[in-house]
Length: 332
Ligand code: P6P
Image 1 (cartoon, rainbow, N blue to C red):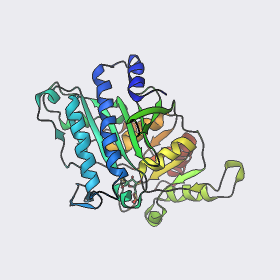
Image 2: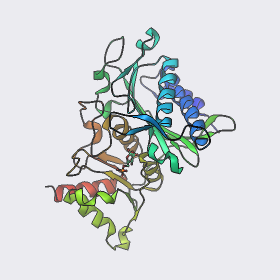
Image 3: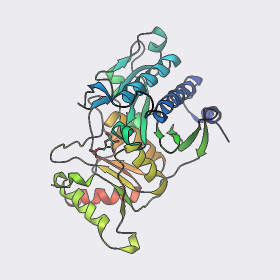
Image 4: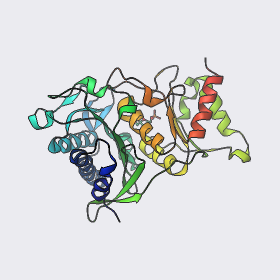
């Protein structure tokens, strides 16, 4: 069984930009994930469930574990000195490191330290999502412009799913690989080599409670999924966990589509481009799938704000393309 560090070092030669620094950064993310995993696994026992008592920029009540996870990843990346700035869901403004060592770091990171944290209390899988870019600015504290790069510029992206097992899934643009944590030795081992999302599937993930606010194209795609046509595996099955990482991870392995569309109430939907849509879209494309707003490729969007949202259709290529077809046919 190959460990994460052995794998990164082995693959290091593949990276055009590779350097020991990048290896160090990925390893630091793995260390933070282990610390977060430990707290999540005993959250019901420690006084770490519940609310922190503040809200993030989204107006969402921060959970104690949200803040703990954010602190863990920020500290791990400070320790390594590879990162000069971080855009985090938990920080309203860009987080820049004050130490000179980090200010010379070549990379910037966008992250959702604990996505789906509303599921913590009910023991449903949650996740960390991260996206890594090379900085544009020369040196010193990173800038917002360093983060406002289109997703196609990511040099790496990944997530950690804290579920029945804890799995780190990432890509550096050379395929997608998954590593399962063995808590008894505190190491991630390669468990899902060369992950490929099935081109088709029969699982669709969407919160249908928002149905009346959906655009006609989304409504028509849902009806398509529900039609009786065994030759195309329909009616599909609906699975919606309320945790993007968990829904995407299942669809990555089994095939499927996850949709959080724009609605009449929220034209850009709910998910944030920098640290939810872009990293997941990068992984989806690397695994042979597709990710769009229903109209345009997610990775081509030029961001203008750190916390901007985007409609999100992601998963098996054929399923995303069918949904896009409906969006074009019934565009309003
Ligand atoms: P809703 C979690 O807050 C999240 O960002 C995703 O992980 C999840 O898929 C979605 O929001 C759930 O949102 O509106 O369906 O509860």
